[in-house]
Length: 174
Image 1 (cartoon, helix red, strand yellow):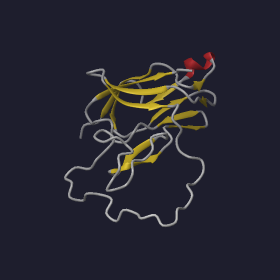
Image 2: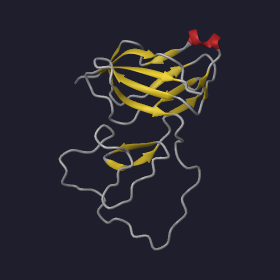
Image 3: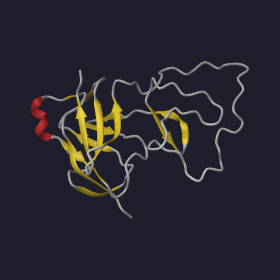
């Protein structure tokens, strides 16, 4: 089985507020030039102090061979609503939301998250969306979580391919 190789870690800090004195103490996972990394791994930046996540910026992942962008997380897009949607009386739900005769399962690489399945309406794209298990309508997700001194980055599912080399670029835009 082929795995990923991250040839370089992160080129800039995103919307993570980090004092300049901390920049030399940053650790990355996967480490630069790591091999045998699962293609749906998360990325981790560990600081010597607790980072603060900003609300603007981009995390971009590139194919190292072609320099083509394969994934982008836009931090200005909120993860999802903070309140539950109201119940709507009389709503008719789709009885058969998927085409079960497909020979391939849709994923973030082949279909835009928010694309309706069955006869559903498109999912609004004003929140972070990702496809899980072929459900193209999309799930809301948090692309970056802060846990103590670590920033954990979750790229869109199934965007990276086994046996390829990638690098990550983080751009602060505010």
